[in-house]
Length: 257
Image (cartoon, rainbow, N blue to C red; front, side, top):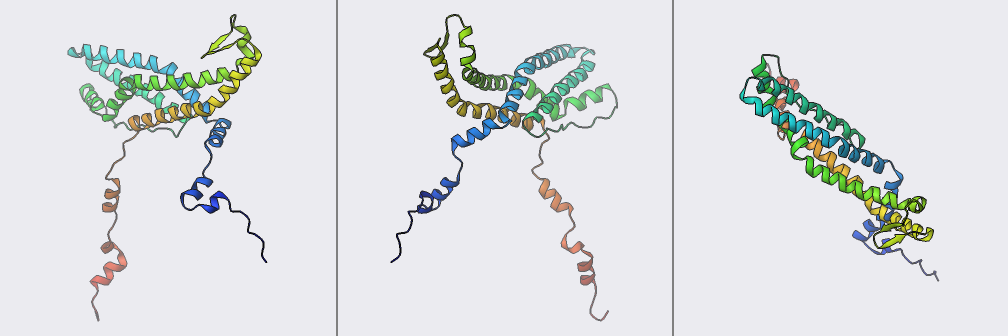
């Protein structure tokens, strides 16, 4: 008689979704892999860069735009419009370059302006949709992006500080109040560090996700615009089947000719 077959695994007993679920990575394992990589630290540098550089660039662009358009009633406003466009492009270029920390670099998509005079240059630059998108990214979206970055950084940096709390809790005169736990002894500090290690499994996704969202917004707003009809234009530009040399010769030749 044959022996009893070995008990099948849960993945073997289930079909469809069960097999896929068994082969999918566990959330904890995915978080640990993320923590072991460089993505959280690159995301931290990217978000911190915007927290530090974003407010000065926002102030510079806003003041330049306000002063320029206030003086636009005089002839002095015309050259200042060129200066304002140059300031916006310079700050936007910094934002594109910073994306390299977490993703592929973003290419600029400005129109080529020929030097045909002051008025024509001003009109060409300020009728360029890319200039208006610079204003949208650097001025209009500044506050939402800053809040996103600051919140993600606060969660991540707080988690890191709690992980290291056994090394610095003693430096606080009356102990460190963390949520409802007062850390003034080494066991309490170790308990807080253990809880922070578990919290890091969640906050690491927050900081990496915030950096990804920020870079996606920058790529969409400051990057080149994709032509939705590009594929159709490519097909129309290609030679059709009647343009093939062999086919055209066969259709124009006659039997016995």
